[in-house]
Length: 162
Image 1 (cartoon, rainbow, N blue to C red):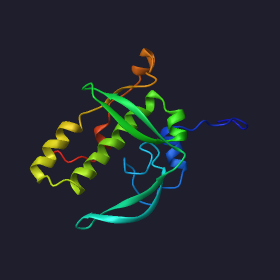
Image 2: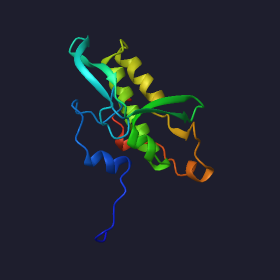
Image 3: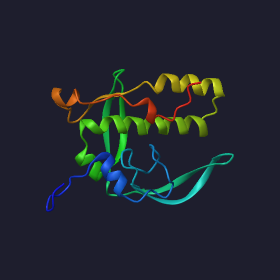
Image 4: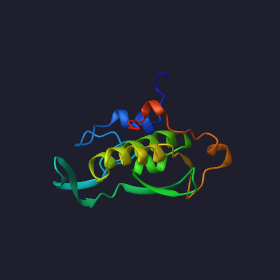
């Protein structure tokens, strides 16, 4: 980049330059943006939901919080939490990273919150780790932009399937 040029930040670039959230998570988690992982809620302590597993108590949602609906490959829709910056700047190229964050968040929820036995956890994640975003709901991406959406990279997924 030559001197005097301004760099436009989005998705991964934006996340790298920001401070990590107080929970140290880089996946979809209650009260944080699913893309850059900045906090979008004010927290007040935590509560134990299972032995050794705690979740923050969300006091209120901050003004920078937004939600976006996306369509998945099976035709279902999913609502994701984003900060205002990611919501306004999101591009088709960010859908891959967004879905990786969601799938990794699902794995943590399955491991820590559900009462599934190990066999059921693995079966559940084998099914849902294959999901991917095909479009944004409102407004929808153009045909050209939809073609830029990539499936989640297996190398970025922290999913137990065995």
